Structure formats: C-alpha cells, structure tokens
Image (cartoon, rainbow, N blue to C red; front, side, top):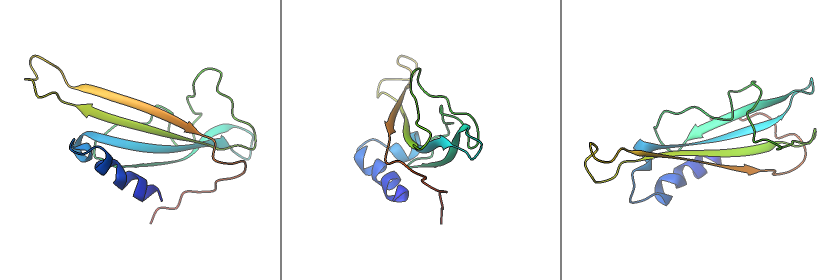
Length: 118
C-alpha cells in the first residue's frame, strides 16, 4: 500500500516534477517493550530528493509538536513531504523555495507491527 501511495505522489504533482525534486516519508511512532516512545519504522519514496525526517530516525526518540501526546496503546503515523520548487524566473533573482508539510494520523489502537518491504 505504501508503494502505491508513493507512486501516486508523482501523478498528483503533475505537471511539476516531484520525482526529482520531492520526497515523502511515512513514520510510525509508538512505545517499545520498555515503555519508551520511539520511531518504530520509516518508509521513504515518491521522489529522489535527499532529505531526512524531522521526526527522527528509527529507534530514536521522536520529535513531536509541543503538547502532542501518544497513548501507551496507540501508534501514530506521520506523513512528511518535502518539495523544492524552482520558479521559472532566473535563479539569480528568485531562489528555489522548499516546501515541507506534515500530517498526523491515529489509525487504530494496537500494534502496527514491523514494516516489511519487498
């Protein structure tokens, strides 16, 4: 399913070239067996832009908005999108603009398991 979502990004962004200038990440945040809130897994795709997740790396403590709480039985899916737009105007006049957006989802209570990538 994640492969299909990532593939759709390129079509959604048409006529802009998301495959070269964008990237999407999906991060799962939840509690480990020791009761620590961690980044459980991440999936990256949709484009070749090289960026790191602002949420954090796998097995690290996630960076979440102030006041955002996660119940001990919840998993949170966080979608991050980066896109660098280069205006048609000469770059010496107008610099490229980088867009970054996030969305947070509480899909269900309970374990989401391990991401398996074929």
